[in-house]
Length: 78
Image (cartoon, rainbow, N blue to C red; front, side, top):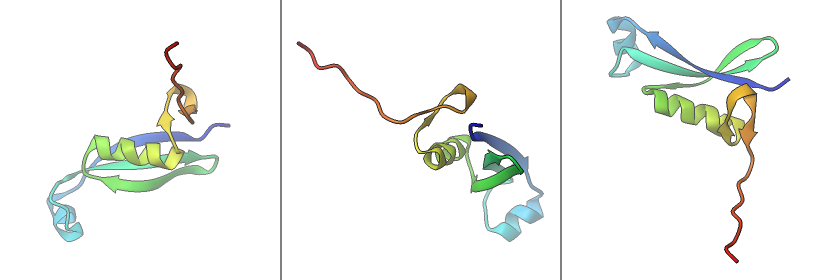
């Protein structure tokens, strides 16, 4: 079974944001799915950062269905 990834948006209270030291109430959790549930791999301030954390954890570009790009090749011009 392919590992799944997701980005979850959380809105924290102003007090939680102040206590954590983050300047924003909006947090994005990068999570990896396992057979026993979801595990948070990073807490980010933007969607792009969270998606990058998922890509880094997967080791490549994520595609639909849990697939990822391992390497890319380009055909040389003749």
